[in-house]
Image 1 (cartoon, helix red, strand yellow):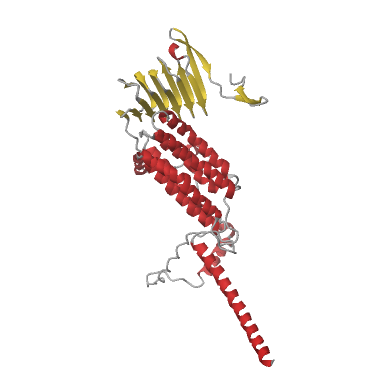
Image 2 (cartoon, rainbow, N blue to C red; image 1 turned 135 degrees about the horizontal axis):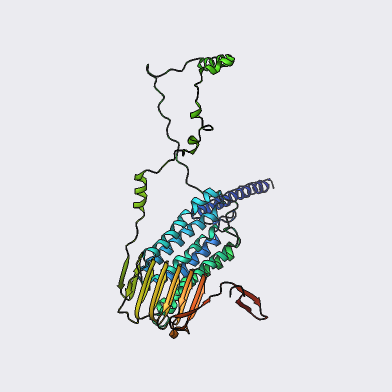
Length: 472
């Protein structure tokens, strides 16, 4: 009986020791998983150390629409492929940022600005690539990406970043519509490219709505986001070495200065004997000539002015046929620009021309005016479209036919139509001071302003928009 009881006590002790060991092993397992999750940038919830659903969803975006967009861009090649690789690199950088946000608390604003700097640099690089390749035949592709890539800045939008991404996506559609118009019937690769690129931002909106509806979500329980530590302080300098020639500090020098000051004050009226007399011709209130003299001013050195002028280098003017594109760029005060011997498949791209006049003879496919000021354009026949973008004070005159004129982001545009171009469609957006001049006789025109102000009302089943009376 006693032996059986002793055996029971021994078994009970073994069970207690076994339970303690299991508890310790479980605790060690949780710690190991948590450490592994932090090292991999996964979101740790303190219980199971599982990977972040946010980062997993972003991985699906990279492996789906982004991978498809990169594949479609490689099928086109040239600048489109290089641009796509830049976009992929920017999205990979944003993935790293999201992994950090999933495992760290939100830092201070100054530190957050430094953490977002790599994303900003990617955006700037992508936009600069478009500017360096304005003469490319894929300029509309590059512009679609360049205008919408700021959508990556949604991580800095405090409330509702989803609509911000949609706004950037809408900016891209202005240029993707041009791509579709140019290649819809000729090259299916470009149509697929448009759909794959726009799907990135559509999926990005869904991703934000699911994981970051009211702004970027940071971790609540993990450490603050790491920032680059400040450099260590410089080592202390050597102690000062006093020589016999150096002035030594004198004990009681402050007390001696105070005694001298009080001694001067105690002189009473005699203290003014040491002052210098000023004659009336040296007093400004008695000599008006002194008041009229200008105060000395600091002037910039000629060397600094010369260096600043040298820093600003104007681009060389250019008028040449490159493939099927006429390039007219960077002309100033040039009123005899002429394009002759045109063909039906050629286009003309006019960029950065100020206070100049261009004449296009013959029949051409389309004409684009971009970032010009005080430019006059006279053309005979255009079978496609004439577009004016980001310009000021433009005058157009159609001598023959033109089916469509598009005016976007332009202040001041005068359009002279011919009798053969009265059926022209004029599309405008974000523009002002537009006037259409209709011929009424020999060298006589009647001017009609394009409305800039509109009124929209609910018509029962749809919105009804019409120009207001003020807009004419």
